[in-house]
Length: 294
Image 1 (cartoon, rainbow, N blue to C red):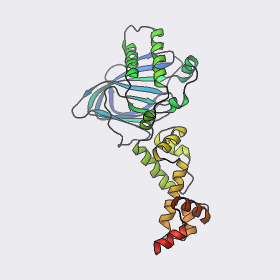
Image 2: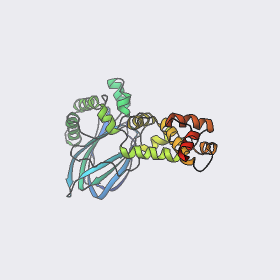
Image 3: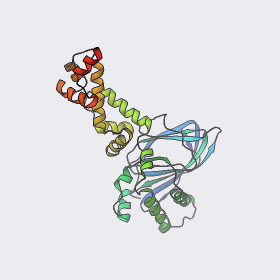
Image 4: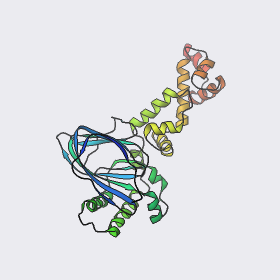
């Protein structure tokens, strides 16, 4: 088979419980994993192909069993999602991590999508839907199709290519339709990722920050990060950085002259800071200092 998702993973506390069951379709590769989990099971994953992951079954150990799934580096603030029927859509190249809690075994389906083959079969795919992560969602129609695909992977006598390809086509049509606003918000920047990005901007505001740095920090594509950041904060990243620079300069005004504070905060000169300061606070730095000192 020519298509291969080139999946890269690093797992901890997870071991196969049985042989991998998989099936190659015309525009996708599907595999069913049955694994045993230790107390701190988890992994980090990135694939060169977009994929849909669905939890098929699990064996709890007591307490609230679930899974935390996040984009980019590990973030313990991500909520615990139920393992029953939980689904995630991960765009190509987006790094994800998962941590399992209170489950001794899992069974899940991964469907890796061949976008080139899908485009030949179905025409142009929606680029926004392809690039938009959806984490920890449920969808009855997708779940039904995914379970039928899992059954094809495990069947000793699968129904055949026409049936399997029809299932993939139906799943893609449902999955890659434009996502509702609520799904985009939920699958975008979680509070912990917003905090990670804004903390990074605050720390490095005096230098030129590249969009690629912030996208890598959150595990998103540059275009999706930019729109998701604005949706979460109300400002695009470059305006947030300008606000951070003004805040940095204001914090320095009691210690150094205005011109030095401007340069230390990343402004070209004092006049540059004065314009930005007035836009943000309605007064100039000099006037703000006079009011502050009485």
